[in-house]
Image (cartoon, rainbow, N blue to C red; front, side, top):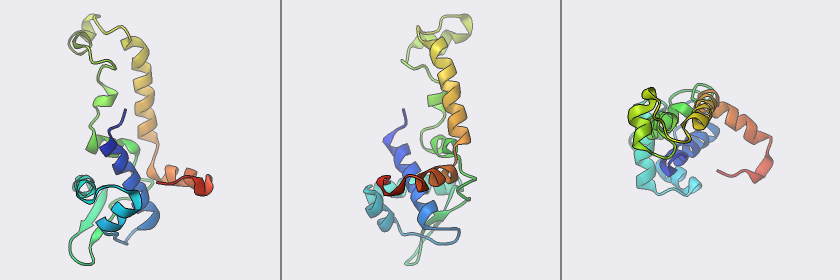
Length: 147
């Protein structure tokens, strides 16, 4: 459902929220190593999030990435919107043209009605689930959850 890029973005924001605090910057190489994500690819992802003010970015020898907002202010939908867009919440599940062009005329795909409510539930989940809530849930799981 989510692209790998979006999953990497979510993991990186969780990592920064857990390890960076409000003012601390973490270098791209450290984040890349800890999360096992290629550095250049991760850099592009984090820059996209920084452009939207979800993260901060500082250049130079003591630079790195930090949180642009608190973990409780960043919902999953914010990250998904920056990386993947909102198409997952609006597009046809099976990609049929009739669904995209004629939904209002009653020529929707065979699964449109059933998937419509699921799509809405997904949107509500992503909108209500914050990075802060995810981190709180991780605390209860002990050491077996690894980013």
